[in-house]
Length: 226
Image: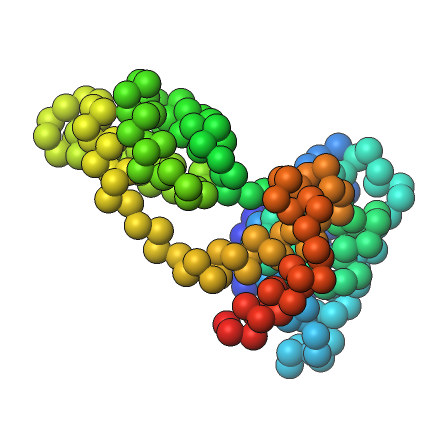
């Protein structure tokens, strides 16, 4: 089956994908950067004589088709759920929103590094973990942050002609890591995930019982500053 971004695929060919997906069932369909595909940016015709809106309506009807229950699972991934079109968020389409957050404490940070190290095949001893936790004490990190640190340690070892990074390599990589993303943008994305979440069970304690009005006010303030 063909894959790619909407810009890589002629709009008139997108309905063919729906037919292919229907024929393939049972199947799991993952839409990455879903805010670009299913977002509010589709408002207006965009110079395509309304073709985009008609295709959007066809896709929405397909995803919400009760006859496809159990045959198709649709997963939309986005860092900005607030940009998804509202009619895509109703039950039967993408009504279940499960937010993914950075590590909330040292235990989660340790788990992230252990998992990423295992995936990358990088040995991670207790001394290295202690150094990592010291470097990121009080800071939230993502899986991509952990991967960046371990890859830098791996590169240092390779440049020295060593097959594996040492504790010193990992400690130096963790100590020198600087997150390139704007903290305000990261906070905006975190708040967007909290506000879009459809069940308190998926929220960390810091957000589960927070004042949603205050969260919304902070989100709107950060959004205005973009």
